[in-house]
Image (tube, rainbow, N blue to C red):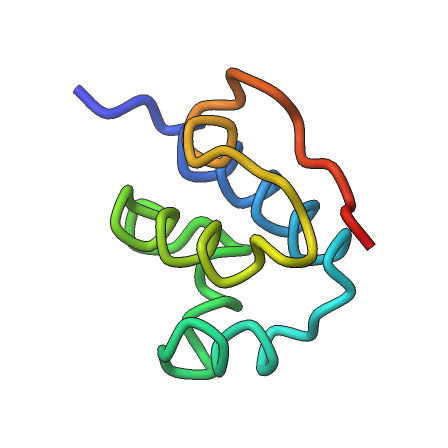
Length: 85
């Protein structure tokens, strides 16, 4: 059974990461090639929140800005994100 808090916790981490990168939702959407509405849905935890495939795309898209592990974005475990620039 899915823990109802998981999508909301992922949403908080996603917003924290996006804010650290200083990217708007639209800028991030363009970097990962998704609809401009998708980051807003992720920040609200809609539809189960960020999945593993999306988390990997996000981490890869921002790797020149922030050091972040997919594991942290999905579960909160591992190293927290670190600004590189």
